[in-house]
Length: 615
Image (cartoon, rainbow, N blue to C red):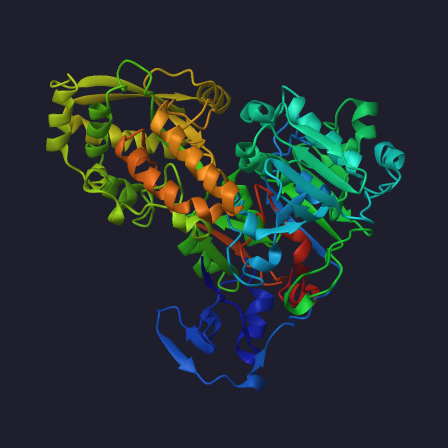
């Protein structure tokens, strides 16, 4: 992650502009007023509008820096996707806009102290970082996996459900302690319910025995040791622990008023299509593990507001005017926003997961490897990167997106076998030779199903232009979002489809190119892949360390990429921007496995700075 801090106030020169110049406020007219002050590696660099920079001596009496001491109070306000799910059995707790990671907890979670705020072993900027060595306790305070095929979690004592006296469901629970039996119920229902994501993705867990051993420990006995990685993925840091009596009384938790958990915040109000409002849970157990606030009770903020902002322009306007504390930017919008909002901080990272163009390898047309390889070579990735991503994008993003946390398993194209490297090199002549070998010497017509989203249509329009050079006519069949999602999730496409992939947390499971789940969008059925994944599981189980499987997965990548199962949709870096009154934040999005926005509990709001800046 590249991180550049771009806020500091030079007292006399900048005080007036900070008060007057809000996003869209009065324009400045002098170089002094237009100056943006950057702090890099201990130096103060003043950058003028013309781009000239000069390093000035840092005079302490001329610099006013807002306090970095933690402080309680204030509200964090963020933008959100549409909020539609309050029950992760019926909904999908990993989806953006989920509220469960503010109000509920899982057995374990990602360790804040191992991110940028602490040892910086990961950036926590992506959703699917699920490595065991980066975990911290939550509902459980310790664990023991020493017995093959058996997972034991000791449940934290003194951890209470939050009490919201405004809601009947919470009053019924009464702020009682979280118990082992709650954990048994929560895990059992997510495994057994046919509507749950876990039920469909992990049938090997259906026969697991889950029980309370009577000593405050939750025991999960699996059918075999080979099920350990999958069980930990979806049960330990994915499934929220909830009070059974709420489900037994109301049938489910789909009504927001039935949301009861032991997390850092309490859901106090929800207006569909507008916002969700949370207040601080005064009985929350966690303390800040590192930094200037080490040992402080969490959360710092009095509350959180999640504003539902569905339109990018609306979201940008809300950020520019300080109505929300965080914003997002693309390679297109970041240069402009960074120039206009020079006081804001930012970080960049490559997003996890995403979508790619998948061949139906079980269909008549693309079952031939030569034809799939031909279409890869007929694709000019350099042109796609330059025309769609501003010249800055990662091309090899399927089936694994690069992240330092999983770097040992990632195969860079430069170190791949020659047969893999040539797939990413534009070569229409070789493509036509392979088409002839596949019985298509004169070309053919093929259809791709995608969303009507402009970026997807633009991507396939470029492919259509490029493939004309090898006599391939690409017909683009854009669908409304819901229809498209239904098609790719069901696998109901004949030739090509723009489909979703699973995140980095599934690096060792191989869901993107193996098994019956929708993430295996190319419908790959290859015994060698299963053999290698089984070997990776054995390595993990023998050493109880996921990194033990890195070399095996990296070797497997050479084979998988060589088969040309999918045409990657290159990923440009995404940017997170935030106002400087949000302290102790470094661009995190999810600590652990798809725990959207669970970083909020660790940050504080500098109300004085916010007032000084006129917001």
